Amino acid sequence: MQVPSDLTLLDLRGPVRELEEWSETETPALVRRYSFDRAGALVGGPTRLIRTAPGVEIETLNEDGSWAPRWFASGGWFNAGAAEAVTSFSPRGLPAETKLLSRGGAVLSRIEYQYDAEDRLSGTVRYGGDIPLCPELARVPSPPTERERQLMGAFGEPNQLQVGETFLRDAMGRVAEEIRTIAGLPVSHIVRQFNGEGDVVRFQNRDEPPYEMEYEYDTRANWTRKVTRCLDWRGEERRRISYYD
Picture 1 (spheres, rainbow, N blue to C red):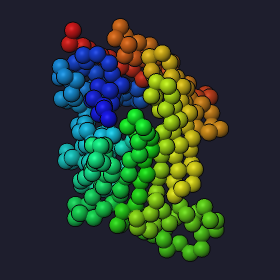
Picture 2: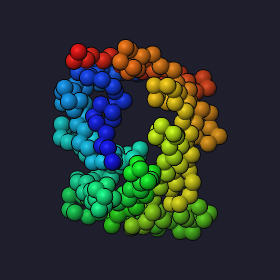
Picture 3: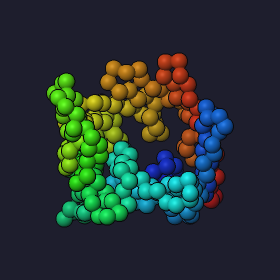
């Protein structure tokens, strides 16, 4: 399995030296700056990227300047106060499971990875750990519906199935559909459409209104302006990119 580079994780192509990005809809606009070495590795920015394939571990700063770990795995954010992530691998060298551990070594969450015949990520299953995320839910008397009982059990009891994700790819290998469940119950089915550059131009979850995107590109096929629309809402993002050559 090919591990994505830092440039790929930030949706960039070519020998990028620096990236500045901001949203025109933020007031005031927050400019995020990243810098890369000639090999394409991130060497400076608001986050540190540390690969824990198939996703990436991202460490962000607390308000007091200390590091606050957050883990990104296969499209979902997990931050349960974990102090360490431990990944085990299959005989084929693919990540098989990641455990998020507390400072005391307790398992807070466990993520299993699934692959297709070409060793591409096809799904993940997340289980709760030894310490329930919301133990108070297990004490709620007589949930009114079976669905609510399942949801409460997933997050109120230890070692329960929590979140499942299935990824369906198009002929180019891009994730065109993403199906998510919570406690085994379907909660979302996202369908994506792409343009010739490989960027998402349409995004829809079930029967919800779709999001549609338009792009402007530089000469390296990196987008520099992205406009997203959904019904009466409009968002605009900008990027300024410099290169080594």
